[in-house]
Image 1 (spheres, rainbow, N blue to C red):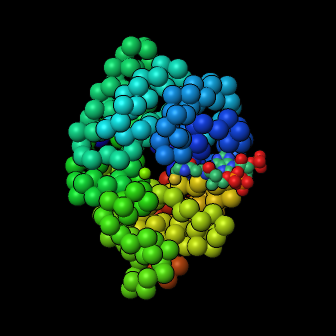
Image 2 (cartoon, rainbow, N blue to C red):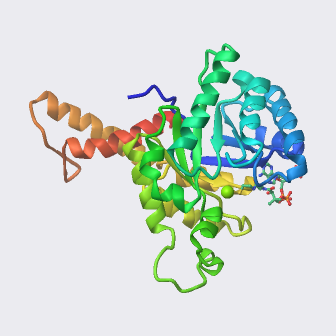
Length: 303
Ligand code: COA
Ligand code: MG
């Protein structure tokens, strides 16, 4: 058991850390989660200046209830450790989570965890900063169970299909679904990563969908990952935020029904029964596991 904070991640908006304009825009959006990027959205010559811009944004913009994350460069670069140290030192408690890229195995998680613990000590922080990681290399997918279990600080795994395609050698034609491959090319990876996350009681998140001019295709990708148990998807453009947050929320009807079902079951238990009838179907403790998940999500969303 850990005391991981509960956070909504129905949508994680990616915002280039080199763009003050986009960070300002992101702060004003009604989105569960933003991550200010130091990795691929930032050109090499902008990496160091972007740290300063991100620190300014975290310290001076009002993100409201939105979770504030910074995505760092991977551990093979010369930037990663300094990314963690400078961002934590500069933003302190105005930062909520650090996101690791191109994780290769559980050691990468341990490294970040230890460095973050050192910084928390140095800065005398009372708040613990969260950690999450992309799963975007075949090495990480192969060891995803160990990665998911590597640290109580780890809160989420994200399937990054862009880099992952390159890593596995998936043909780019397949990514658009144009190859005629029978089935969803990401079915196995999403299942595998989601199971690893759920075993460790952390969130499974689906990565980006680049063609932001096609909202219907984006919605379908959200729906597929939601059905498998993922709790959110990235947005790379503000127009994707509302779609993701809608698909990853239960409907009001589902929530009302779940609460009625919970009440009916509690009533049955108080009468010494393990199974009961609810609107023409049998309900038991197994049904309550699903129901409680919906109620829990609804409470977090404020429905
Ligand atoms: N976060 C915050 N604001 C964003 C945004 C983002 N990810 N993407 C676009 N915007 C803003 C724009 O600045 C613009 O603001 P304005 O109305 O105040 O001028 C508005 O949303 C509409 O943007 P639009 O003109 O449609 O797109 P664009 O050409 O400005 O940007 C991209 C298109 C793809 C360059 C941009 O969306 C982007 O950089 N996305 C993130 C990329 C990224 O993070 N990649 C790494 C992770 S996969
Ligand atoms: Mg990547």
